[in-house]
Length: 242
Image (cartoon, rainbow, N blue to C red; front, side, top):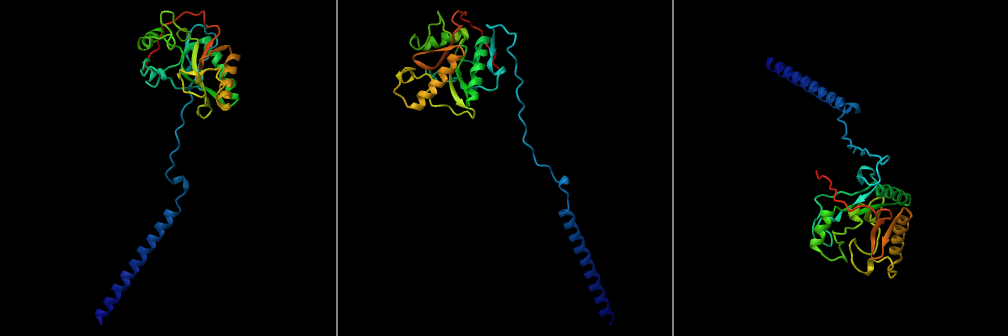
């Protein structure tokens, strides 16, 4: 009989302990489920890229050289001569930068504002070109049909010429019929044997640039000279590469 009582006591004890453990487990689950949102680990937030602090051209001398990216974040760049993706098949710039004289920069900013109002913006292939770079290019292709003789220099060497195209505000290039530095009749402004879309894109580029003081050359749809740059001196100013 004593053994029976002992067995019943043990069963009762273990049963109570099991109920207590189960009750604590259920309470723990309830506590986990009731954790407020504020106590949960915060979701990682996207890091905001700080906007560049832009400079002003106000008060600067017309002939001073400036880096365009310091004055506007609304241009695109594909500076081909800082790569081997050009007709020279050679990299002739130490690093990719787009400089012009101040008066050229002012005209470009105004032209780009008009393009952006229409849903486009300027993309640069080449800008100011130091005369030392002109000598490098001449050494590779000593042909004035393709490269200006560095002894005389070009408007690029004066900081008044740019090679450009147009892209959408999302960065997609407009169809201009040929790539940059395509030397053939398909690149000529007076070649009308092209799709209407190409002709319209070229006309938009040409008319807007001319409105803001630039003039084109017949054989290159991408090349524009500032009208007042012809009398400037050939320069050999060089920028620092980080």
